[in-house]
Length: 209
Image 1 (cartoon, rainbow, N blue to C red):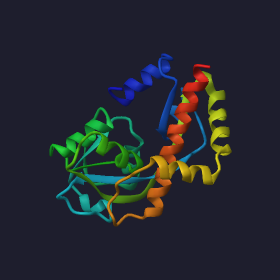
Image 2: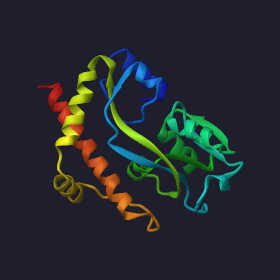
Image 3: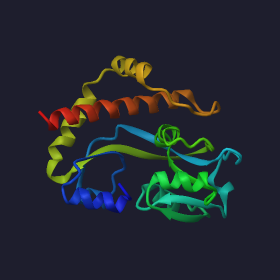
Image 4: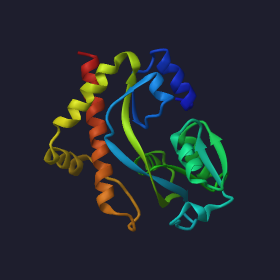
C-alpha cells in the first residue's frame, strides 16, 4: 500500500481482508477486529552504518527521524518525549530509504520488521543502532465484519506446540542481527515470523476452500 491512510481506506471498502504485525488502538478497533498479541517486538533505532550505537533515545536530540504516517511508533515517541525533528513519510520502506539516502538521520520501527525487511529491500548501509525499552504489541487484524476469523486465528496459534515452532524456525528463519543483541530475543522474533507465515498460508487456504 502507498501509506497507512491508503490501507485504512481499502480495508473500510472491504478490498483488504487481513493485516499483520499491527498494534491495536481505539481508532483502529472502530473498523478492525484484532487477535490476541502474538509477539511483543522491541522498537529499534535504525541508522546508517557509520552512526553511533545508542543506549537511550535522548542521545539523538535534535536529529531528523523518519516516521511513517499513522504508525504507532510516533505515538510512543510522543509519550516518552523524544526531542527530535519528526519527518513524516508514507511507508516504512520510505522511512528506511530516507535514512539510507541521508535525508534523515534515523528511523524507528519494530525490530522484527527491520531485521526482516531491510535486507530484502537490498539496502546495505543501514544498521540497528539501538533498541528502546518500549514494545509494539503485534497482532493480526481482520475486517470488522469478519471478526469471527480473529478468534479462529487465535485458536490456530494456541494449537501449535513449542517443538513444532522450533522445528519451523530452524528450517526457515535466518535473521541477521548485530552481535551485541540478545540471541534469545532473536529466536523469539524468528518464532513470530514463522507463525506469521503459517497463519497467512492457513488464511489463504481457508478463504479459497
